Each structure stands twice: as structure tokens, then as C-alpha cells.
Length: 292
Image (cartoon, rainbow, N blue to C red; front, side, top):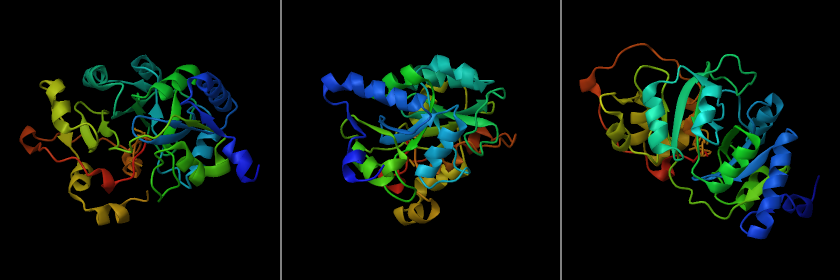
């Protein structure tokens, strides 16, 4: 399909309540057909597809000009979905879901080994998030888990409107759900929950202090990558990351290109002394491009 008019026809108005139901139905049909959709999240716009459709996930990465070494996070409609996607979910992770989902918290967990999916080079993990966005949750409830990353070509700013996403991704996406502008705020915070205690992979909208406040005696550890991200300059961020801040990476897509850490977690098994834990400041919103 070529030409401006046909592409503009892919914008589906969800702001108008009378058109919203039809727009969501069309987007759901697109996902079931194994095609790619753009949807709003609680951070930025995300681009995604059926997480269990290997070709569709490859189409998402191709649309972003992105390789398999940066697997997308998976957005879920509710916490009950997690046990079908992940195994050995620690109790502290369930506590975090109870407190912060839906919201800007991405949890990296051990993936169910029996699942027939291919998100990229994940080392047996999956990054999961439940977004705090009504439109996203309605679509997820209809079609199930979606592999979603920020709606932009790698190296370009994440889209905060459906039109911005269309301008970047064009015909690679079959339908664009237009839910109005998104803030483009901080991406989701990402935690590695594959070990006995959680490790911060990226600090975002959710602060370490908030997380520690609900964990009780469970220690939240900081990774070197999270510390580097918190202290890097905008220039460092521009040169050290190809693009998502998911989160929403989601990501977010809600999650940024620093979500390259997602899915590539290999627990070292080395225990970090409690007195080595430190609190680091969250990165500035302009230091990384957001992921749904």
C-alpha cells in the first residue's frame, strides 16, 4: 500500500467514544491476523504484536530496524497471566505486582520453558509489565499478551502521539490506535526477579525507595548498569544506547533502549552484601528514549 491517504486511514480514532469500540475491534483483528499494531501506553506509544506469533514479533523488530539482541517486553492484561508466561515467580515479585501493577514496573522473570514463542535472545527470561492505560488494557484483554516496545525507529525519539508513530513506522504497521497524546514521561523501572532477591536493571518512573518500602526484609540490589544510567550525562546516553525507555517498554514501550538489558539477564549467583546496597537517583527523562 502506498500514498499518504491509505496510510492515514490506518489511524484509528479512540478519542471519539463513538468510534472507539470499532477502532479496538479493528486493532484486535489486526493482531489476530498476525500483523503489527501501535497502541498507547501509560508512558509513550508502543508497537507490538501477538507475543506467541514468531513472525509477527520479527515484524515488530524489523519495523524498528532492531535486532534480536534487544527482545521486546511483554505487556499483560492482569497479574493472573504471569503464571502462564513465567515460572519460579518469587513471592517478592508477587508482592511488587500487588502494589505497583498496573503501572511503570517491569519484572524480568524466568520464562516458562514449554512456551512456543521467540522474542529474541532472552537467555530464558521474559520481561513482563501491566500498563496503567485503559486502551492498552482493553486491547490486551481482547487478544492476550503482546510483545511491545516503543513506537519509533531505533535511534529516533519515542512517539508520544499516534501520528508521530505513523510518521516513523509507516506501512510496517497495519493499525494505529489513536488515544490522544501521551506524556512521554519516564520509562518503567526494570527489576531482575530471577534470583532470591531483586536487582535494579533500570531506574525509571518508580523510585527505588518506593520499591524498598513494600519489600520488608527482602533486599533490593543495584546493578552496575542501573548506577551508570543514573549518573550518565545526556551525551553518554546518546552514545551508549542505540535508541526505549515497559514499559512502555515497555518495555516500557514503555521502556527505553536501555531495555536491551531485558531478556539478557544471567544471574551470577553471587550474593551482594547488604551494606553494599546504595540508593541511586533515577535517570533524567531525557537521558533515554522511553519503551512502553
